[in-house]
Length: 160
Image (cartoon, rainbow, N blue to C red; front, side, top):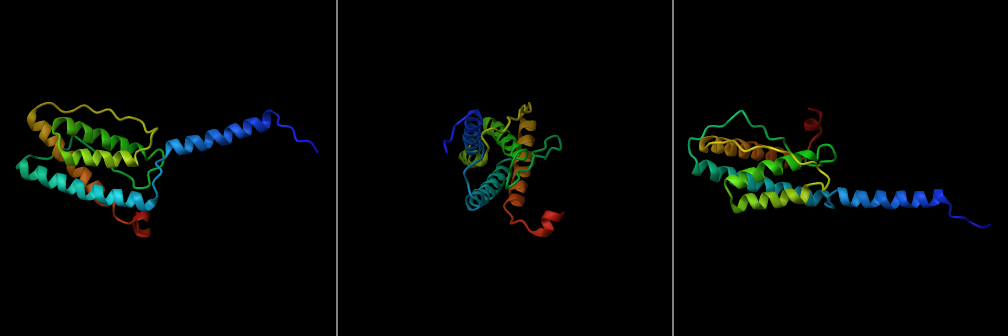
């Protein structure tokens, strides 16, 4: 019996190869343990960053004009957009107020980010007080988000 490689065989081979390539280039190659470690580190860094900012900028009020999307620990499309959106907000803060901890946080988010995630566009507020309110609000929301994201999920938490 002679086997012939016709157009169907070639198309299936190509589909399998392209599918594997797309999967390997679209999703971070991190296991649950590695992601868990990154989330714990992000929780610690975000809390430290917020505490330091509050100490330096006493009396700055929060703003209700800014909302940071919360990160979802096992982000698969379309939820992976949150990682890119959070990263964009933190990069904006980094442009206003650069520090080492912010750079570390962005590096950790890069490890979690999907390569094909869409870019979020935000514009930085104008004025010194509004910059400070923006920074405080986003850092607070990010710290709260990391607190939630780093907690182990329970059946009760998933139901509600």
